[in-house]
Image (cartoon, one colour):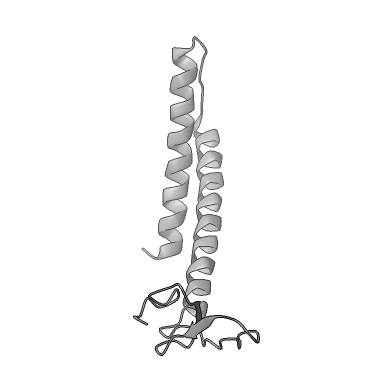
Length: 111
């Protein structure tokens, strides 16, 4: 079976199981539960549609994650320090650091 049919069956069975769980809670609380074949079929269809919607949202998130991910870190362009600032430049990444820092605050390279 494909992803869509698996999602439909899982959603339908999950919806039926959720109904049975809520029915068991109602029985324990002293109520009554009744379902016929038509109601079970409609409940299965509703759950299947919910399963398809969840699969579509999941696939959209997977595609969005693949499009924006990159193996290379984003380009870093440090801003020049203000005149008269007491700082030092990191040789590894080019960021500015306060004079008191012994290592770079961005890449943790030694001074």
